[in-house]
Length: 150
Image (tube, rainbow, N blue to C red):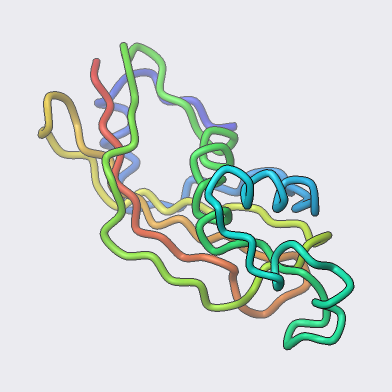
């Protein structure tokens, strides 16, 4: 975990790779709960028996599930002390280069692109790459924007 002491210190790190989160296991329970929350019950996500004969050889995480765990993973990479609040502001670009099989482990690598005044605080732009253990392609690459308020 990298800790920045205020926004100015975070700004100095712009243009650098901040590190990697610990590995996180993607479970069928997590996928099923996401399906319940979103109403997306497609069989490639929630039917392990049918998915065995499908294109991926088993169930896979929803793309949006993979994206939804980005904040959790990023919070394990770095923190900024001395801020009142940090919120998700959006994503400029999201891609899913490879499916994330249930039972696989993922982690996030974070490259801090910029920290600029805006939106009532500072807009923090990062490229987050969700790697799949043992896979040559990532499960998700997202250009994310957060706002931190000192």
